[in-house]
Amino acid sequence: MNSNDMYQDEIVALAKSKTGAERLENPDATVTLDNPLCGDRVTLDVTVSGGKITAVGHRVRGCMLCEAASALVARDAIGTDTSAVSGGRDKLEALLKSGTLPSEDDAWSTVSAFGPVAEFKSRHECVLLPFEALGKAIEEAESKI
Amino acid sequence: MSFDVEALRRQFPILDRTVHGKPLHYLDNSATSQIPNTVLDAVERHEIAHRANVLRGIHYLAEAATEAYENARKDVALFINAADSSEVVFTSGTTSAINLVAHSFGQGLKPGDEIVISMLEHHSNIVPWQLLRQRSGIVLKVIPATDDGRMDLDKLPDIVTEKCRMIAVTHVSNVTGADTDIHRIVEAARAVDAKVLIDGAQRVPHGPVDVQNLGVDFYTFSGHKMYAPNGIGVLWARRELLDDLPPFMGGGEMIRTVTMEDTIFAEPPHKFEAGTPPIAQAVGLAAATRWLSETDTPEAILHVAKLAERTLSGLAEIADGRIRIIGPQGTQSRLPVISFTVDGIHPHDVCQILDSYGVALRGGHHCAQPLMDFFDVTGTTRASLTFYNNQADVDALLEGLAAAIKKLT
Image (tube, rainbow over all chains, first blue to last red; front, side, top):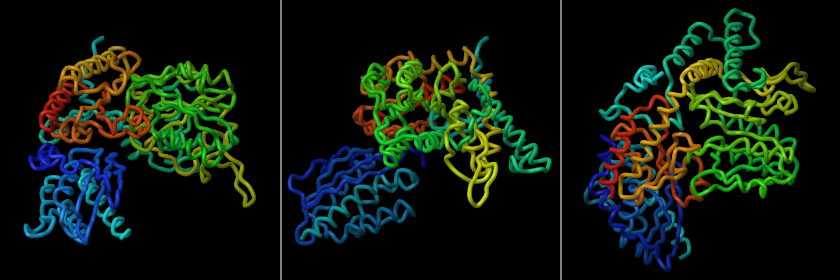
């Protein structure tokens, strides 16, 4: 695959959508994570209630892939079980590392949008970072309950 | 005499290859330059005919390897106009050379002594001094940057005090390409009897330097950025300084006598070269100095300057002003290391698209995060040119950049 092909329409559209690209006023938890390789930084706010994610907001200082993954997280996390988030991250990692596509019926099957990134190992962390931030934010939010 | 860039390119076999089906346009020379045949041949000849350990052996190959290693030191000394080859210490690179000085020179410092660096430094000339600060309680002071990415040397009188023991700064910024006026640095240091260390990693690939004329005390550079193999670098220091400094690392090769009670160290430079040194790499570095001394003609320098000018003017013409040059806007007192940002597009996305055009660039913080903070950017895209680059490389850069902006906007 040509490097140019990585920026397929779905990824570009996700990034441009800027879904959730606003900080929450009263988050239950806020996490900031850096990717030391490229300097990407994600600050992610979350609120949870009754074991479900109720709101996600983020600020991304990073590349288009990081912006797209953050937008996907914000779009698809609302209403999902907090316990399912680590599964979403695992599905994304499996897709990137071994090309394993999630089943369409699975929670977080939408991570398949990042299939074109799989061939570019130096960019994997760019899309994983928002998922890791979400996982840590939920952990922190639930620890306060 | 005209400069034949295509003839020069034929000396670099890698420049013939394709990337993603496109000709390679290698513009990441500030990170690692490519190696000409003459250097590759020198390394191969050494490994085939003279591979052995140095200094301690009696057999023929050991003698030959030692001679090759010490001759390499003489070639490097000639390249930088050192007074004597014993002033040339081989290291694994610039980073290890600066760490050596931070440790050995640092041992003689006391709490409150001051080291001056600048905002333009690579992390390799920041972190070793921060570590020294943790160990010894020294004070680290910083020469600020100007808006066009140079050291603000007008601030020197405010920063360099009687407590200053060393000014350690870069000769050329690896981000902005700005060329530092070393004589002003030396003048400020001498006024308070401080030493001067120069990080020459980005300067040396563009031609020989004269350490005696510069008047500095320590000069450091790396092989892999100046057409030589990886894993070799140089610390040059005046001999009397090397005599006085304690060794950094201990081990074989750097001793005269070892008993269970004590060790008498070897004379410089071997005092600072513990363990088996990078022998073939030193041979390669020497070949690179000879090649560079022949290549660094006024015509070649003019060729690169013109390419830099075309790159800067080309960047100014595309994207309706969305490109911001991080560094000097013109070609005066700068080398062809050109950093820029594209409004709304991350440097890694720019570099990824450019890669599909066969253009090798570098994007990110360039190991200069304080400078990124100063310019309030997360990173930059950097094109770094050298003698073997040609107009096609610049054209590919500008064409790919226009395409990247179109695709990602």
